Length: 336
Image (cartoon, rainbow, N blue to C red; front, side):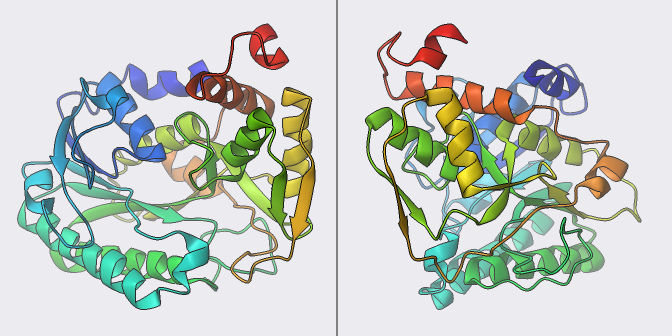
């Protein structure tokens, strides 16, 4: 099923020759997006705080060192670009409440600076990675659609929502087009166990035989979506040009799974999980978050096409290789 998802844009010509700047190119989503843009024939400018592109991107992107928080290098990174993909955030959700001023200064003010540069350079469209997991906060009705009133309970989600508002303002005042994608909980290739992400963390613990620590009792429900489906949604959103279409879309699976559900699924793949330890829950964790993805289907023609178990298997095999697991050590990797 993964092949079907990738086929829609790999052979498409809509981005062939387009100049695309990816902010946060060395990150999890950014790496996968840069690889897909390269396959689609785009000229890819990767940008981030690192001195160089990661090895997987070295021959596929032109690297620009840039920092959203300070504005350093942004002008050079987006000059002459058709599309700017804004994937950067300097804080994670949980610690953002302890650094609210920093969050605003680096991520909100930093994005305003970026949007001014995009306007000045005539960028056609900004694609923004918002957050389906934090913008909404606790909601009484699930799945959650885009018309739900946001009730974020962490600074990260508040700033993401504020950025969406400024994107709307820049479109209204300056005709700078945009799409904001409220992405659920992505997982897949290039997400390492030390990064944000439950699934990569659990696989990493399993492979290293390290006890698994869970915040809360494992009943927290999230919407998990495979990274290649997310990348397809991001690329598809570049083609949205209907003036009166919505510009904010949920990108998820539309299906909720508890932390305990995820642990069971991973156990069916790795088959030898270490012990699981439960700790008190965190204040920034919303009890249930499942996204209604019908708007993306109706306006973008996008739906996720990789089933849960297949996506987990791909992720597991990739991590085994990335962590230099010995061939044949892990049953699923050897037989799948």
